[in-house]
Structure formats: structure tokens, C-alpha cells
Image (cartoon, rainbow, N blue to C red; front, side, top):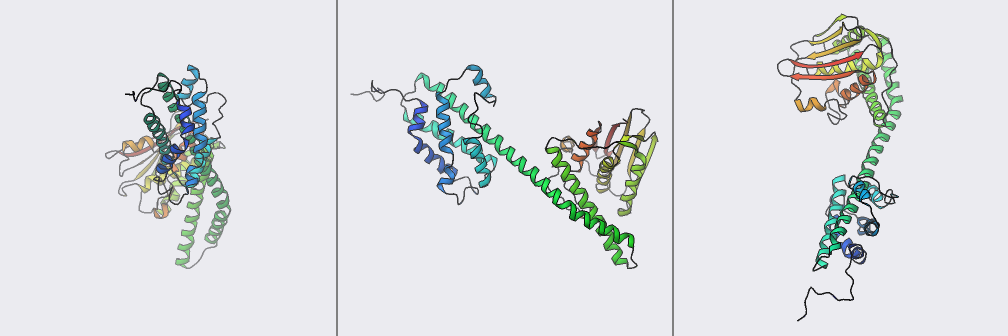
Length: 387
């Protein structure tokens, strides 16, 4: 009786690279079956669209398995670093990522395709062999490294494309909206200065002024976000600035639209220093506006300017109201902390204000922080060097 595990002496043990090349059709068919389940992105996609560059990916993996690799190169690859001439970069994996992004696949769906490819190859290869050879462990290790490299390249290209698209969108949006919003704002200001004896018209004009001002602030936040996404610091033009006068001016603006809220501004010491008044006004308007917005409405919102230190000025904005959870305090100055646009009537915003405030304060060489609890309320604190 013949031994089922015995091999034909003339038949060479098939290495994994050869198996992938010779069984490419079966591997791809099983992989396509999985890709079809990645709905809704794959709904309506043709077999060819699902297949796209899987042939090139398999070719890369087979070639990589047969290429020599030093221990140092193996360590670099395991850390996601480029190895050798990097031929796979900007090739199959990146093209695959670009196509999946265009097809509506999210990043989790795209990564799951690589998991399915890994499982398909290993399952079919193990089933093909009744007994594994000593070289098979090395082949499996190299295969997993190649898949991991492909995943790294695809994810990097996917996220880079998403970020570039977002920044381009923000830039175009900001550029195209600035002129019409500016024109509407100037018209609203002109109508307000012209005056009217009709109380209803006066209210409409006042509402229009506030609306265009709010749209301008949102636009400025978008442009600052786009600038920071490109790795560019928020530009500041420093000049001699009286921080107390700036706080009083912003407080007056807020009182005009929040008549029932008490807002106090106190100072001690010297409030002067070299800062960008427009940018710091942007920071203070955001902090004071938030304090009024989230105040309990019964106790005052207080702004304190402490200028006793000859080198540093401290501005604190405090309100009583719902406490900010500890986990949110740790991330509150990050971009998109609050997500999408919030509909708060006259105070609608993008949730970018605190992130932009941090960028502006840091551009001045300063620091911004928050403390919050139910008993003592919420305090945002800015520390700014005077020069």
C-alpha cells in the first residue's frame, strides 16, 4: 500500500511563492467573494472592479518571498520602514487604496480585504500540503511581512489622500466664500449705520449684522484649520496691546446680545504687552462667548486679567454651569473635538474655536488650559509672555 504522505522523488516541494503564482485564479476568486460582502461600498461593483490590482499585489508578494533579505531589513520592514528600492510604493497597494477610496470603501473595509487575502492564501496553501517542510515557516513569515507592508502602504496612501482632499476642500471653501460673505457684511453694516425708524426693519438689520459676523468667524476658523493642517503656524502680527481694553470691548459686544447675562471684567497690575490684538480678540471672543453660552444664567461670567508678573500676563475666563467631563478636558483643545456644526441659534459654530484658540496662544509662545467641576465651575486660563 502506498503512503499518502510520500512524495514523488522527482517532484520538488512547492514553495509558497510558486504556489501563489500557480494558484492565482483560485486565490483571487475566493478573495472576490469576500470583497463582495463589503457593502454598501461593493454593491453594484463589477467583478473586474473588485479584482482591480489584486494580481499586482500577489505578484509583488511572490517576488518579495524570493528576494534576499538581511536580518536588519526584516527588522525595518516589521517597523513599517521602507526596504530596498521601495518598488511597491506608489504601485499596487497605493493604487488599490486610491481605487477603494473612490469606490466608497472606508479604511476598515479596505484593511479587511488584506485580512481576507492573507487567510485565503494560507488556507489554500496549507490544504495543498499534507506535510509542511522546514522552509515553510520562513515562507509564512515572509508572506505575513509582505502583507503587512502592503497594508501599511495602502493605509498611508488612503489617509494622505483623505487629508489632502479635506485641506483642498477647506481652502477652496474659504477662498470662494470670503468675497460674498464680505459683501453681505459690508451691506449689513451700511444699513445699520444708515438707521431706520421701523423697529422691525432695525431688528432685521441687527440680525443680519450678527449673522454675517458669525459666518465670518466660522470662515476664519476654517481657514486657520486648513493652514494648521498644512503644518503652517497661525500668523501673528504683534504690537503693543492693552489686554484689559480688549476684554472690555469684547464684553460689551457680548452684553449687547446677552442682556440677561452678567459679565464682569476685572484687572490687576499691568495689562500691556506685545501681542496680536486681532488674534487675541479671536481667542477671547471664543472663550468669553463659550462661558456665556454654557453659563447657568444665574451667576455672573467673570474675566480676570492678572498683570502683576513683569514677564507674563494671565487671563482667566470663569463661569458656573455644567462641568466639562474629565475625559473631554484632556481633548477639548483638539481639532473637531465637538464634531460637526452645532445648531445653537445665534451661536452656531463648528466646534473649532478652542482648537484655533490653542494654536493662536501657542503662536504667541503661551499656554491655554481648562479646569472644571460642578462645585467651582469652569475656568479657562491663558498665560502669555509679554514679549
